[in-house]
Length: 270
Image (cartoon, rainbow, N blue to C red; front, side, top):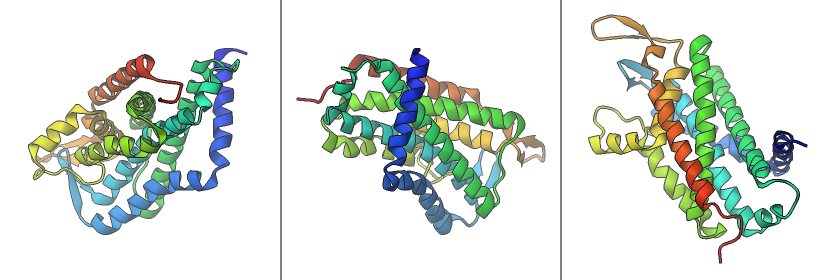
């Protein structure tokens, strides 16, 4: 069987394993929705400044929680599970089987990407039903899908890279969450960064991929809308979409891939 076929078979096995743990699967999908309900209940009144327009806070959080879901599936959950499998000796034993290492890892990454895509679809549908948010079509939808796939693969690569910094499985949740959670706040995922936010927070956020990914997701998701500038000129949202954000996320993913190839360990740490 070809490497592609083996990778797809591994994806199927990983998917079966994922759904055979219903508690873990349930909370994987419930977590972003739970945050969405909490944030919209506490902060859902009024608007938030996005570019040159005032955007409903509820719409803002629908896209933010969709972004959070992708990062959770492709970075946090993937990195933690890899660390636990490494310490349990599963990765080491896998290398002793006929299954190529690249096919095993490709299957894990593909599955994480599919979970991230499903999380976005569920969050978007939830937002449409309960908050009246629109779903992109046409060119904005294409931009959104490209952003979603690039972001999913890039954060998966970063997940494999960060495992090299985790000493053991017990430390994995703490190390990985400590890596990603500050960036979620600094990138406006949980709290919109308005004009009153300190400039150093905005500057730090622009360095890392979370903000670029969130901005690209936001503007492509809202591509069907329009904005009115202070002088009264109407522009479609997609004019605010910047491919440079997608390129920045892809660049971080490439860095993660290089680091993973260089430092990833298949054996438990001594």
